[in-house]
Image (cartoon, rainbow, N blue to C red; front, side, top):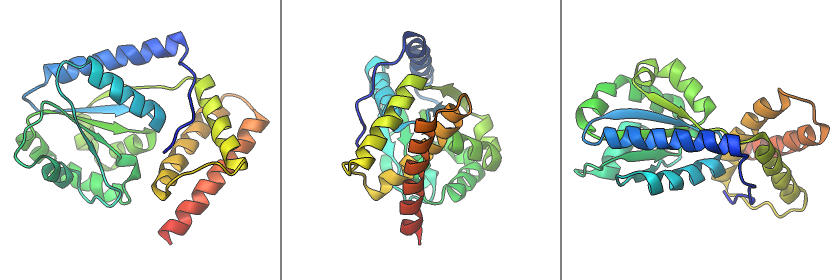
Length: 225
């Protein structure tokens, strides 16, 4: 998804994310040659992609990235097909939030969790959002219990500006998104509603969120029909 320019994070939030990134890099480096499941939780694609690039810069081992296809059925098979006989120093998986049948994928991953541990001798980092994490705890609790979780947040000001800029693009007919992007947008807007509107009332922000979320839901409904 084409992202608007985001302002820099406030010092406190940037410091929290940098600390979590360093901890994630250390966890990866300490686990090379053995299976370790790590959940990196971030609700927003623009922040997630920036964090992935920063992590690849500071981590002392090479990180391989797998972006799941929307039609992917099982996580284990997707990783197997990507790697073949190769054993990476670390594998990072993106795109779980866009998988069409995430429930099926998580159930399968939970059922074959021992296969992950027996056959994947490398740290496995899954980038997820809050909704994926909630589903994982409900549907794949045994797999989730193995994981170390690192949380990455977005500053309120950055999030507010992001919503405002997307709304401006929408109302000026300059918002260009693919169908897959609308799935991500819907998830991010719902997360923004939970984070922003729970704290205070902002009529402009609330109206923008409702308009954008309505658009995303309509597009996604038509796509699935």
